[in-house]
Length: 192
Image (cartoon, rainbow, N blue to C red; front, top):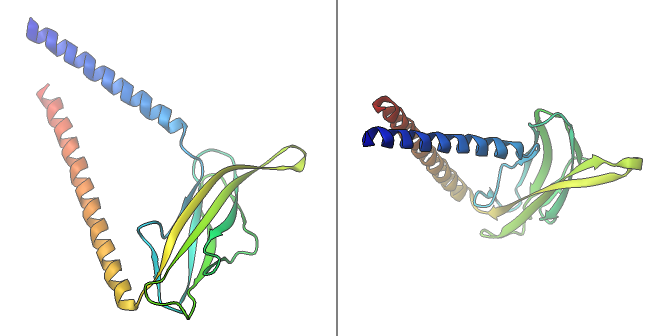
């Protein structure tokens, strides 16, 4: 009798926990941002170039949630000495459901730069909405920063290989953990 009562209590607690989790997930999903910026470089993953070297990079502009188009205005916050937005108009219309819109940024390291120099580049993306009477209202701002390191080519190759190896390791460990959790849940269900 006591075992059966404990089983019922355990079942009720698990049901409440599951219901709470589902409600929490649904509430969080309501607040998912409709827009986003993808960056090829970020804090901890810098762009590495030689003195005098140039590189063109792209930042992805996304609007994957919702039915409304979003307009972004891009501004260079820091790094004007090495970075330049190459698009003539720094305003970008991103249609609803799209992720294939890009801002082009040109980076040039001065010839006089020394190995070990570091330049900080920052971009701000502000959403713009149409207001009444033709006014523009500014909405959410997304800022992204990254470093540009002046290094020789052998350092670039070594660091690139190390980053790829560590990323693969983290992804593999994460996959194993998820698999173990799934197996534990399945075994528990079979015992009941």
